Length: 402
Ligand SMILES: *[C@@H]1O[C@H](CO)[C@@H](O)[C@H](O)[C@H]1NC(C)=O
Ligand SMILES: *[C@@H]1O[C@H](CO)[C@@H](O)[C@H](O)[C@H]1NC(C)=O
Ligand SMILES: *[C@@H]1O[C@H](CO)[C@@H](O)[C@H](O)[C@H]1NC(C)=O
Ligand SMILES: *[C@@H]1O[C@H](CO)[C@@H](O)[C@H](O)[C@H]1NC(C)=O
Image (cartoon, rainbow, N blue to C red; front, side):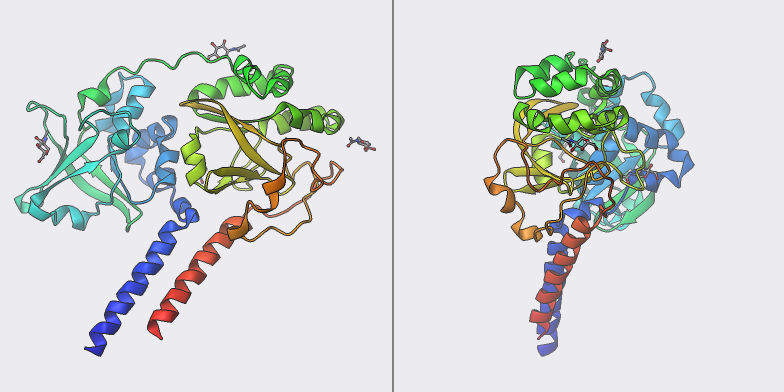
């Protein structure tokens, strides 16, 4: 009796700990689909397409996910589709639930339906973003898109490639899941004139800086159709920063403008629900994470924390996947070019309080005057959250075991 009560408590404590860890935003960064598949050259085409369609970063941001991978010969069936259509088709191959080898073979009543990323991104209508999974006698498992007609042959489960319970499972299936909706031609994105868009609202001065720098303009313009989030400082912020900007070398001017662009598409919803470091167009090394910053959210408020300055997202200038442009309250200053603010980093739970009184200009006192270089570690913010989550879980465990 006592024993079983204890094991129930233990189970509860472990569950509580799992819940805390799952709730931790940093946990979303715990795997990298590109890296997982890189160990399997027979999936190189599939892997390359996940990156090209930006699905790889969507997958890495998620938790509890199953990727249905296709080998290089099965991928040939996608050769004649345009990239946006391939994105739709492959997003049908990403199930937003966890199916490991064992779970597949033990489906209750032998069948289930799972939503895919094609469904969860709102691209699909009706039931077309769902995938039926059927487990037959003898261990044979088949996948078929729920909107497929009778002529479509289901795709056979081949093997498990990698399982990290219950974060990500990567399974091989024999052929592309067919869905008329996913295969439908995707109209090309409406052409966007970046300078015109920025000039229309909030960011006229920043538009001027960009159009005056050919390298920066070309980089932004080339990135905008393939996933770009641009944070443009409002006119008052540019005006306040101008004396310092003029003092920068040509190279540093280019770097600081590119620093405002993140080569990935983030809807406002994504910004509000994902904390973590982002690389920018000025980043030269993914490993060193130079020219990066921490995207933080506190309910509705999204801040960009560079360690030199904390800038707040104040408005959406434009949001049409794959391009998002947000106005921010302050010019972003990288620690690679400016002195790191001395103020101690506020505890994660209190974040946002400090800047609460900030207004839209950039006459920031936290920013020390000189364009001297300094180091500063990018990682602690993330590890700090982990440590907090782990400590909370530990406390729950201790309490229940007492
Ligand atoms: C994921 O792994 C690939 C290959 O190892 C690497 O190039 C890429 O930078 C990694 N992505 C992230 C977000 O760490
Ligand atoms: C998928 O499963 C649903 C519910 O069991 C069923 O109505 C539908 O016909 C199935 N679709 C296919 C293509 O097998
Ligand atoms: C910007 O990119 C578009 C394609 O999105 C292209 O048509 C246009 O010529 C580019 N503009 C310049 C000035 O290079
Ligand atoms: C510009 O640089 C000069 C020389 O390093 C320095 O004395 C001056 O304070 C700087 N001005 C601003 C606004 O940072």
